[in-house]
Length: 302
Image 1 (cartoon, rainbow, N blue to C red):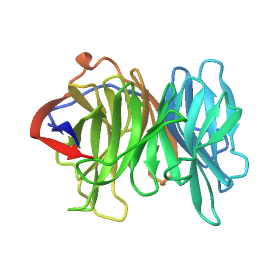
Image 2 (image 1 turned 120 degrees about the horizontal axis):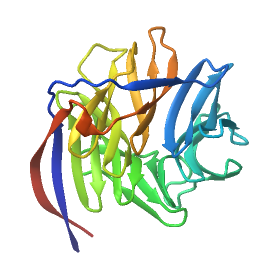
Image 3 (image 1 turned 60 degrees about the vertical axis):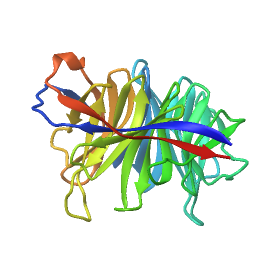
Image 4 (image 1 turned 45 degrees about the vertical axis):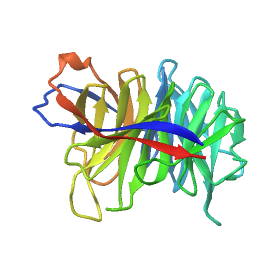
């Protein structure tokens, strides 16, 4: 038997007055009916768009202003979700019968499809940092893989764990709380798991991490079936709420340094992409962050 020490914390974001002049850049694929931006690394952004009812992926180099349309061979739809260097990860799928599979794409040309020795192909790759890929399996386990070895995890807080983003040894993700049927977030660093909750939000969904910078979404209590989502940027000590101008909902999906990418729904329900560069947090009026220790315990596993 081995004993593992889990330090379980909760981050509660306490709202103070926030005022900042943020420069939002709307970014849409030409001719697309909807655009979603999911990942960024340096000058390259990746995401997906809908054209004539078909969901396709793209990568775009902002420096050279060059496009690559990404459609995995043999699949109905392609959804790039993250990028690190020349590696793009995400999911692909079929409509009939419905299925999805994680993928890696090297240099916009070489496709590889993930096949876990324990959980097969029904999984989704959601984050990448160097050679390490993270995501979730069909049965609700978070995974880390370098393409050869695989490790699987279930959050100590709840069920249906999904790893969303990775930076070095730190992972952000979500879990499902079976007591209230809502999704919440966490930070995982080695054997330490930290709850991540926006104050008064019913759901908190961290999506990506770069260093100690985290972005994601949260939802306050509101009426169904069209809940409103807002986004946040967290730098390790302070939090900024992010709301795209004139947006019904705002979804931050990726971060690289101080540049955030994502999408928002306009008043007509159309999804548009955005690129946002955040000035240094010290220059803004921010939302303070409180750190509270929930509990500390030792677990034993075989």
